[in-house]
Length: 284
Figure (tube, one colour):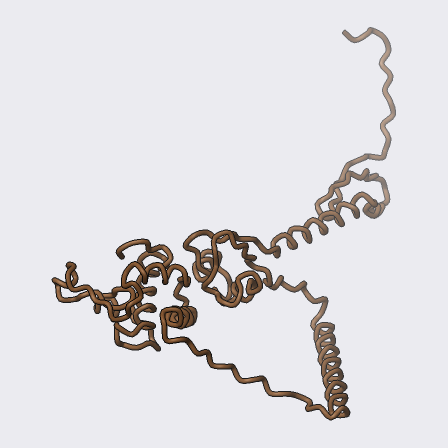
């Protein structure tokens, strides 16, 4: 209850006070504003505001750095470089994935084993930062180009002084020869498959050949349902003619008994139906 007595009226100041919010880089600072007969400029942002802006910018750079990081992938049974490249949308497909991991994979891109660690996006180019101005960018490029030209001139001059040719032609690619046996047929087929992005490994092909034909390229099945229907299974991987013709790979023989043509067509069929010849462990 209020106490009875005199009530004193306090003099109201002619100055009115308000609050405004100054924001810089997401940080807010409340500043008093004095209203009077004359206007006063708002004070400059304090060190706390500048610190908040700097922190926000640093955070943005951290996020950008995380996006450019590569990822590690562990190969599982049935994997091929082509399959992994498709599933992870690798720019450049299986060839780019192989180039980035050639040291780990080795000389044959088809020989990848479960447990092998692959790096995806190892050489992905991060987006360049925005140039301050077109003029400075053009100037930098011109300067770098002049520097390269200068280095090239010095190198060529030095080589000429030593009596060495300024540039040598790249050596011609050596042709690869394969032995005319099961080992050579499989290796040649793997080379053709790599050119066409067909998955499969030496082990998977060899295992199925031994089961289907025991390694005889002239093998033929004259007793099963296919033979009864007039389309006997032929060759190393026992392919019927309709399947051979449907999955024949350009660049190989049209003879279904040809070892390389037979293997390649069969692997192309297996890739379409089972993902890879490596996934076939019985009649297919």
